[in-house]
Image (cartoon, rainbow, N blue to C red; front, side, top):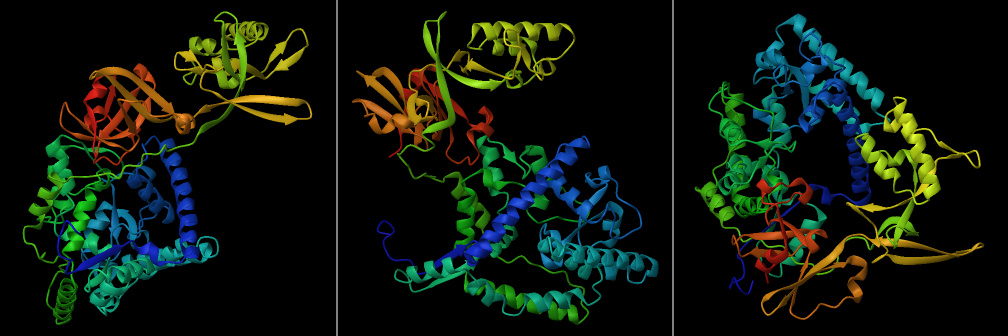
Length: 589
């Protein structure tokens, strides 16, 4: 505020709608979200068994298809599984026209219908489309009755699903003028609701901000999303990412080519020229880029009491015109106070000085969950960490014979190693696969007992886990004192030590050793989450991960990327920096 100078003349607060509920209600939502996630995984498995790659869109299609008991709500023909998963055969269908309600993919408002049925219904309610066709209307009423039956069946064990069934049953048979229904639900107190129906956290923030500015009010997240779409701001982030050479993704995590972006851009910006224009079920995922918050901030900054009142007055005027019999299509767009808002948004995103708050403390667990034993390996003259393993766990993930045999060679006891390898080779020679060969125990000839588990030296990359760096944990029992070793779970930071302006050494500091490790003189210390500038290209990056390879490496990505480093490719700006290249990294103050 000191940098800005004068105090602001107006402050607008926007908050998430779920924060308005109490702790008990939020806990219910969390449980429901966990249950939904479990169901989605089960659906994904079913789709995979059908030979189709599961995506978010296909999972929603399958869920609707299953809820409808494989029926189309508008005709007698069943919908087959592969039809349900195909956007060419079936469409998501808003029972009440989306042009009137502006409802997105809300399960309680949505059904899956044959492409031909959706086209025939058009921008009408079911009653407007087929009320005069007695046979077709009887079919639709039958589907609605079945939804009511399913709602009653699920009411006790899954109330949200039951209410969705009841809602669909009501909408399918709605005979009132949809304009009147929407009017009754949406007009009364519209502007007042947008400004005042906010959560306790917004009210607390508003009260506190009142000491800074007299003109403070709260806005709702739903309205921000609606205005952002109406002002064609949904494609700002993708456009800038294409300019910068970064990839754009849909909500299923699949890349969107520039050709597809240009092809469907009209739909994503809500400005289809005609019903014949190309449509797609894919939706842009703008949240892969931190700069989407800037677009939201611009939208929020342009909201006002006057804007909401203007929308409410126009809505009332359109409703009165429809009631007079005029053929009028709902227009939910509203002219922004800043006429060149899209150009301004593009310029802001292109020149965004994105910053991340540094947290210069180690993040993560001190140790891995596994506790190791220790054994001396005579051939290498080294002490190594060991772990008891099931024989079946030593099978290579790809069922490779050579790699599985190499895993068995890590058995600590020379006698047991020879017995197991001999049995393994005999079983492989008989035609078994590695998994089959180790699924059954191996007999110990001397004692005639089965060998299920063996003690193995633990591998790390191409070598073995050494004792160096492992922490000793000691405990006592009736049998005496016992010791185990635990290994640090990752690195806290990386020190780049310079000598006379040149690279002297690179040192990784484990999380469990951080508190007792001092920063060396003439060293730059890098932490996860630090923002750095690479002098070679002048770009700003965020440090995501350290690695022991090449004596100490840093994995980093552009500051605007929100995805995990494991999800990024070199095309996304992911970089691995080690050796002398570390000298080109400069910490941002």
